[in-house]
Length: 561
Length: 63
Ligand SMILES: Cc1cc2nc3c(=O)[nH]c(=O)nc-3n(C[C@H](O)[C@H](O)[C@H](O)COP(=O)(O)OP(=O)(O)OC[C@H]3O[C@@H](n4cnc5c(N)ncnc54)[C@H](O)[C@@H]3O)c2cc1C
Image 1 (cartoon, helix red, strand yellow):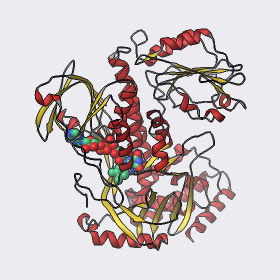
Image 2 (cartoon, protein in one colour):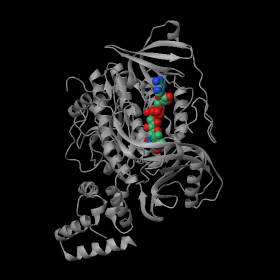
Image 3 (cartoon, rainbow over the protein chains, first blue to last red):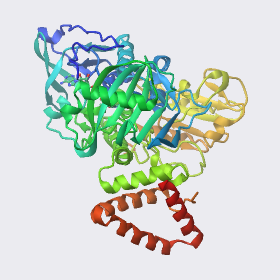
Image 4 (cartoon, rainbow over the protein chains, first blue to last red):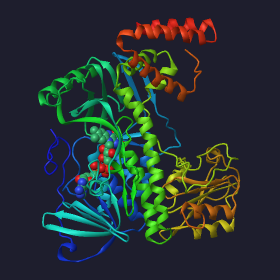
């Protein structure tokens, strides 16, 4: 029952209907926009927000008149929330979502593995937050609607793409006729069936995995805490796997594996779903009344484009890559795509970097996708063993796991992790004298700064220079260097981590030295952090020439390449 | 409890290789194959106590 997107009915969510607004192009006006984003899904809107944060005007097209419906992404990883906080949406996500830190796996009715995700007072956000994609889209779109630089064009379907040397022309179909839309750059965020990808004749490459899952949302009151529950060979689905997640608004997501011989249309009949879900709910020990909200079928793929950049068209989110849901990486990696490309496009459009900066997008983000494929393929083979051999070993690992640590490691669902852009052309070689702290290419981790909140809240809009100082003073030359390192005209922010001295907007006090320790820093250490929070260089002892060299490199400027 | 000797990545590699080998011998000869593999791994074990503990642990996990 995939409900028509124009009129989705839901037990708990009101879908708005966005009007079509006649654009000037339909009346003959010809404008070349800086960036057009195709697709107002979560990735497209995040990219639009990130571009607007850097002062770039964006047009966002979507063929629908509302949010995407049905049950899709529900688990947002900490690293996504850390990125989204710069877009001023993370608070709303936190207020509506359900944080969680652990999970339990069961084998033939017995608990065999306890998943504990690291969480400490250093972190503002939980390792995982459950929030339905409808709310994710709602919060992002409502935030974007407050942004003067973002123009939404609903009910506007892209049907053709003509790439050019100076611009891209899109053929857009609307309820009032078709028009051409010109843009200096196009971000294709139009999802798994990307029309932009098809128009350019590009194909995803990769593999399809064994195993089909029915995905059901159920409305049911229950006090069970928010955690990930995985049931292998259980009473509710003998011989197969079941996953259960709690979502806000008393919605429970139940994913159950189909037998390889199950007929798909029979499996998706309402009566079949009802009796299957009843058996699973009975297994969970729940007794409250429940209702079906939505259901669909799912199969895992590891597919991606060979290159995420095609001239002036850049692909992000599901338009660029499809990854299995196990490990919750799809949207989480789409968010990272959006944050990666946003600042780069802004720098290129403002003339601060050449087009060469955009060449770093595909190696960085496709590298992340390939890493996800390696992880996700293993978790998918564990969730749905593709052959008898895998099945025998998986069941052996499950049976051994209560008593043996080595077997428990195989049960870890390998949840979404941020990727380190280690070999990126934008990164400098790491300083080998560091023995701790985020390596070059890694995202900067959060840290608690007492009454001054959390480290990541203090990062700048462009680059951030983190300078570690015993007495709170920073060299004059560092101030001058920061002024010259701009992103969309915004100079780098100098953030001093001080053991002593006064606290102010630019100085964070590290009274007990834990920020120094977490960064392997001494008096005079320095990190250069990109606008997307990734470290691109660090020095145990800061040197002025090295800092400006690192900035030049991070902007892919010709003098360094 | 067994001490982890193989690095995690090597262990995962061996896991994949063993799954493929089980598939290629087929269901009819799995027990034979696994018995031979067990003898070979016994021979590679550093000491008798590790082998006996592994036998006990595998038996216990069948319960
Ligand atoms: C069952 C399921 C569970 C999942 N669970 C998780 C999870 O827990 N965590 C996670 O991180 N990910 C999860 N995912 C993946 C996640 O849902 C996707 O990765 C995410 O939706 C991708 O976002 P997107 O913006 O790239 O694409 P989409 O959300 O697909 O958005 C694309 C947008 O483009 C628009 N569009 C399409 N064609 C055109 C066109 N021709 N012209 C104009 N507009 C167009 C569409 O209307 C749509 O609004 C799950 C996916 C599924 C299916």
